[in-house]
Length: 350
Image (cartoon, rainbow, N blue to C red; front, side):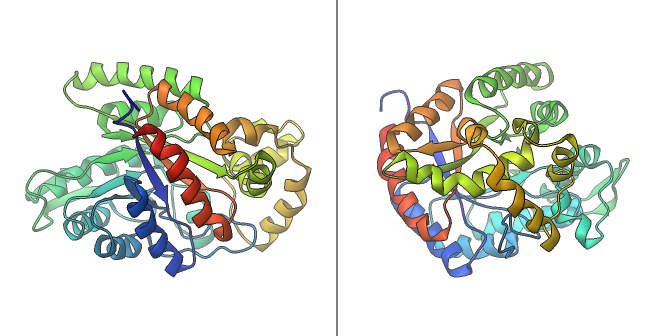
């Protein structure tokens, strides 16, 4: 469609099984998606199965099994890996994929650290310094660095990336991380659960204004978006697909959207504190059926192809250029969701 040719769509692979992770990535490349992303988690987000494989191993395999799509993490964090280790991961995937890697990074979540005894104090402060260390090491030069959290003494990563580095996109949903994106990010990956189209547009304008203060007009930030989508022939069917996954996402990221919850429940079930274990799953199974779908319909994309297109187009008009889709509805409906989305949504913007 005229004026929309620069809008791109990405696909987040499922957590499991591994054969579907790999085959779905090949499928979306074939039908017109521009990028493929994998969560860098220790645990899958689910009430029933928490299977989760290494993001960096998955990206290595996808580098070999795809040829055109960009490949990204959605997202990594400096709590579980030292930035030197992440820089080496990034250098390797960038080489394996022939220059197709996007390094998505954020501050981290309790579900991936607390159960494993991984210390993660001052995550936002560490994030900014980690990005600086990663960029320095990817030059391939010998680096000495003394920061608040990290120290390098004549350290280098060879062969490096000949000074080109990799694009670093930040998962930024708070004021501090949005400012960090403005100062040092190449892309912005906020959550549609947190930002509706109107707040997305106003926040993007504010972030770009801050960026101009620090970096001028020359350096660009790719305005992306991570969107949870349930798409089906009929609205009722799509709503059923989104009922559990949609409520879980809104509950984790924006618990205040459910006024029926007590203050204690909202605090305990927020992803900043929530860990996925058997007892938590039991609590969630009891709570989720009681929650209204109203917040899910407002904060995710649910409906027929035309209804989904209407919501997505509001984000596009607000400035989103690269929309990463995580399909709700389970693995049984994944290929059908891909087919609907590619034929009805992606083709609209071609």
